[in-house]
Amino acid sequence: MMDLEEILGKWVRDPAFGKIATAVIGVIVIAIITRLANRSVARYVERTSVRYRLRKFVMFVGYLVMCLFVASVYSDRLGQFTVAFGVAGAGIAFALQEVIASVAGWLAVSLGGFYSPGDRIQLGGITGDVIDIGVLRTTVMECGQWVKGDQYNGRIVRIANSFVFKEPVFNYSGDFPFLWDEIMVPIKYGSDYRVARDLIARIAEEVVGDYARTAESAWKEVVKKYLIEDARVTPTVSMIANENWIEFTLRYVVDYKARRLTKDKLFTRILEEVDRQADKVGIAAATLNIEKLAPLDVRVRELPAR
Image 1: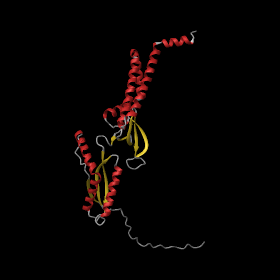
Image 2: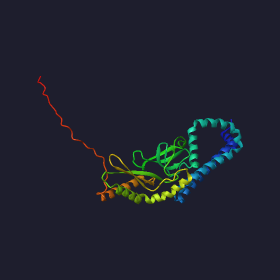
Image 3: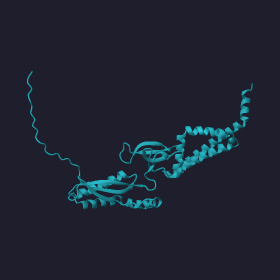
Image 4: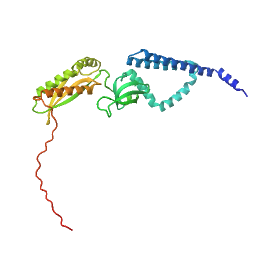
């Protein structure tokens, strides 16, 4: 029988062993270099968005170099495995179709501009800010649910990239970083509605006027890029009269991350101005009138004793 040394010596002299050892050592060296490069990026690049993209790029290049290195090591044998790879690939594609769809989704997101890190999106029924885009999943800091307003609730959600093919992708900050929002102000009958309209318009200009002028230039770029009408970006006030009160609706553009804060500022200023002009304008409230009831004739009959 051959002793252990002869077996090991024969194994070591086998060309297949040499290729395996070369591939493993090469992958380890490339992984170490990639990790050191990522640490250097984190140390020397201060801007968060640039650091994030550089680290993603370094990881992608590292994986690509690993694959090319292993392929070059086994380049002389790739032809022998063509049929085997074809059969295995068909089975793997069927078993991992969701994974393949997620990888395809990652390519669509990366090349198609669906969204980028930092964007606020709604994907797969989840609304939040994109904090990472992986090969298989998009990581989102969730907004809403039990928290009112567009504010974080603390949950980090990972959504399969395949959802970009299954459902609409809502991007709150894609080509322009603002949204239209509205507030309704009920004014009671008997108030001077002209004063009320001027009051609301003046406060809107005070709170969101500067931002509207900034958003106007961004909207012009959207009009150039898409077949869309040149909508009004400056604040507008409209009025209707119903059976309860005069209803003023203020429509304005707002930063997609500041909807709740902007509403707070608008309502605070409106209430302050209404209090100052209480003799001309008053806020309406729903009331319930109870009419006088007709008298009730209640008779109590005494039951006979048993």
